[in-house]
Image 1: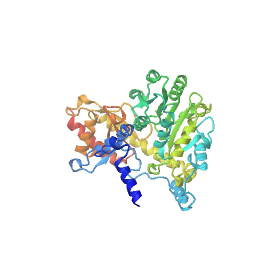
Image 2: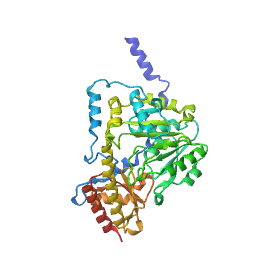
Image 3: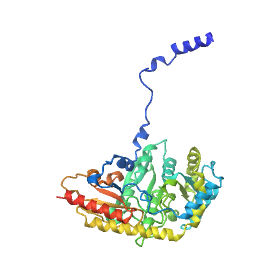
Image 4: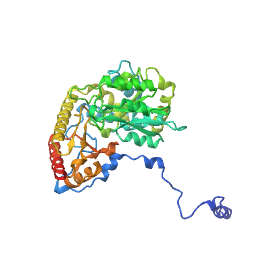
Length: 433
């Protein structure tokens, strides 16, 4: 024991690192990449005041959660499938990192219905929501050994930029054209691409714009990307949520021109965002991505994650196969009516305008004519004052890289939307010159 005490004393008094350590400071520092990788939507929401403007009950049209108002519920088929999976006690352990085979096969079969070729289970990776699928795509294509860049839409879902920041990828934004149904500025894309461009991100149906691209426009995008030799990451979490006579066509249908990584899931269309089940599908009939070992990168990322929630994976085949079409038809009719309501009220409200009626998803982008307001300099001041005065939460366009606009969720019940627009109209009338 005396020898052990002497050894400890010697280590404590003669450490070779003693002179390099400041006893008053901890050697701790946050990762700068993580600090840069903020989520502007969440930050904007959390900075909104919680006071009840003018004594009114707060209404939030900010977060894209279709369940927030408790009106539209998940189909009973989905609830029963998950109940059966949990009560069977067979899915409490880990699955393969890529996901349960039967689950991946069901997703492949489901997606293949809209494609000119067939996907297999090996083309599918299950993820914790669509956001993790986006993370996998950006992480797998980012080149850590040399500078790389990705093209993101503006306005666009800010999580793309967050993940690019995390993986050290330069962000280059291409414009969506508000007066042309938010189509891609193809010339702008061509100017931005260089030999270090790793991918082009496309969201259809669109968040935050509510756009749905025509087959002709998707063909143009695919041919341009093929010519530039740059793959596409297609965010299709709102797949088939199209109305106003529009029809959703998956980007993977054009994979003969360009390899496509499609991300999706059940969060929005089935009204279960809290279930956190998404997928990544590799639409690559010419095996360009496979030969570049991108699938190997996905496998490694999935193995670090261990596995996606197994009971929900087990329930997914029944959910995909048995959800009645009436459920989708009714929810789309409901969303379409509410989109019309918001579009019409926007045109009648002083200082606001909307160049394009939403044709899908759950959002509408509204332009603020700042020249018509006497004391609101920008979209951030607009959103902040609206929350303070009317207890109404909307997101400033700046959160999507598009200042001078606001985004509203139109998945709320019509009574709430009417009340929201009454408040918005009163607010604008009060602040216009």
